[in-house]
Image (cartoon, rainbow, N blue to C red):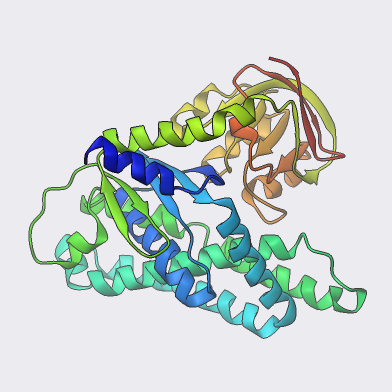
Length: 346
């Protein structure tokens, strides 16, 4: 791809992109991107721009904040007004979770998998749409004001969604382990449905919300990432204080340990203010020793929230910008009584 084309791509990327890190393979990302761009639009009415810059079996995942919020709000309002709809989606997700366990048990070899690859990827696509819908819609629902007469019904709905989300949490790690055992992590899903033998290689993927997928080399992805950072850099440097959602109350002063790469989890020390995009089960050991937790993503149902409540750690989630504003070693005050993170010293 020539420089002119890359510049055009950068111009088309929404200015409101936010960054998350996902520890998945190229194969899973190729399905997730399709799910964001096409399946969620068909199922829920909103497509989501997604760019995966893939390195070392994890990716910097860029999404549009505006599209993500519209997606979350639309679903939250449907859940609020229709408890049966929420239950139906939750039950579908639970059924799919069980299906993946059975499929993996029955299809142990690559030959078995190839015979049933299309069915697997169709269900994986559907799984991602439901997984995202239940998490983001349920999270948004937990934040909006509810009339007193509706509170009990809405609480039941949130509990239903929360239970389904917890039930499906290990699907992706188990599927990733399965892909690794079969030696197919670096393929795109379409390459495994076809008959032609293709040599796997590391690539990055950009999905426009019209469904178009652009395959990029790691070098091209790096250029686009730098372009996104340049578009956003100036505004973040001026921020000294920002807000998020309170999960566990308390006030804590400490040094930031920023985790943008999951391979650096070993560098978190007891008492650090753990700052990351969103925690996963791999963070459990580090969370237990953290002085406080601050994340870009998440709400009252997220993994960080559950662990923070269990270990009574001051925690502010859903800040959207923590990893952009804060740097390793910054001294910060995490006021989880008010949901405010303040930089004391750079």
